[in-house]
Image (cartoon, rainbow, N blue to C red; front, side, top):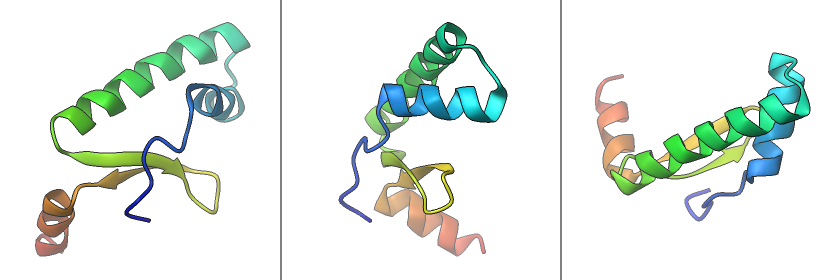
Length: 75
């Protein structure tokens, strides 16, 4: 999965928020834009490589190698 970059689009995230948070279409789209902006900010800071939906339909972040190494060390 290390090659996944932005596989969850703005529309995908909006649909997810509509389903999970029971938001109307416009509210879900506005919230999805905020989520996407935060994901981009985290990517720009070197914290994540991307984001995606897992096999269970959950929105997940793909950490950078350095962050994943830190996570693994804290286990």
